[in-house]
Image (cartoon, rainbow, N blue to C red):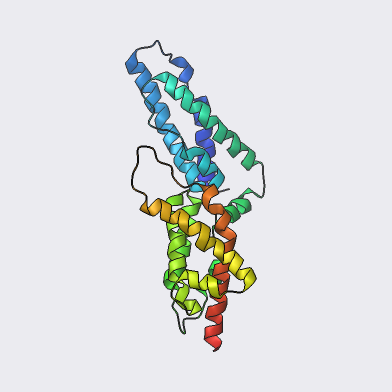
Length: 240
């Protein structure tokens, strides 16, 4: 397991053992503040460690938690009850010897082997260095649960690669593809792009929602196929 996993597990134990029961809602407000603030500090460290594990499912569990706990002991108890769910998930994961491999696979938006293939692509006609960086940052953002960044980078890649296919837009990339490939890449143009556009162009409202893992995860497979096609094109250009 990773250092972040070990730290999160230790902090989970600290959360369970924190003596919140020694302070009640009828106690002096200063005492309640002392207990609540101390518990909040541990909770924040715990959430940070969980996010660094890089498991999107665990990140989703903690991303909605409200860590700015008001200085009353009842609120600290409510937060701990929510943290128990994450602690239980951590303990289940610790018993799975394959957990590290599972996290590495699930946390990557783009498969590591495909990314390595892209890095090794020849530079005869096109330099893929910026595309590689976009894909690396996309993987990092996705693993950390930063889904706004993820969906914007996904769209940025779509806008970046058309010249490799000898066209000017990604819609043209889709249009000139064979039937099976058109169906796959069309999902990026017709479904993923509008999601990115929604979160880019919609102005602030009274009530907001943010992109979730469920909104962009379905596009992992089409994106990997796109990058595989890019690598194949770059290799063809090298031998042309």
